[in-house]
Length: 331
Image (tube, rainbow, N blue to C red; front, side, top):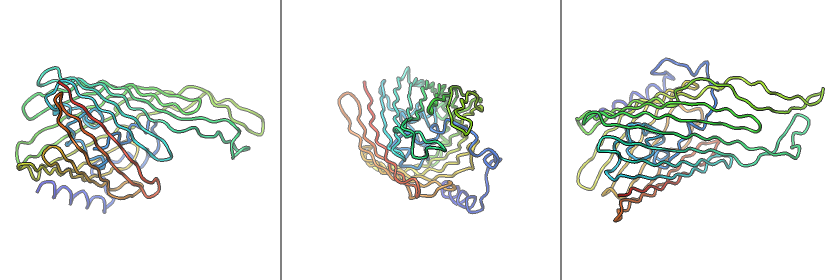
């Protein structure tokens, strides 16, 4: 019931073009770099349209909400790899590993890598290319600490090093993620708050050679680049939790510092903790698309667990995006 009311309120806010929190996007749109940090890296998150803050209980939590790592299975070691076929032939790879120190504490390390194919260098005088090529790539390496404080409350923090390189220019910085999760204890509901990519602006360095009517110029001075901080609030409710069936409904508010707010609704159905079906939709985005969907299969083995996931998203102009994931739990 709570989720239904929240969902109706979200839809009303979208139709009214109103923001629930103070607006930064109206004056700061396009003012940050490191945009790859806002791209969904995992298949489950894609299937739920990013509505993961209060849902995540696997290794994708190191991206969405570090507190979610405390909900991992009881095995000691967990591994995850994910591959995204993004737009314009670009790709994103995500890998994460976690180790359970004790029943209340989890440590994790993860790497996020985004890259584009080779692209031709074009200029005002040679719009079809000058024979040279370039590519862009981004990387983020992170360490996460998560801990259960009480039977209902857990928190986590992630520190990460990020680097962005485009042609001959690169920028690097550090950022922090914070998150907590609170199991309300009534009607199988939970509440989560998280902040991703909290950091400061930093200078870019390198050089670019440009052509003008006066000949070639070399640019060596660039504007500072900020990180794209995102504040999120999420709710999740296990609407059905009986026998072999589990249906989780979720709602989430995303408030970035460099764009307008978005709102997401998601649903995940689980049968016998073996078969997963997911769908979701994100509202108030700059570009609309179809509802996302995904599925997963989990196999219990003697050494632990193996899970395979797939997620699909579509945008009307950007096209289709496919994500594949593989997870293991050991010992």
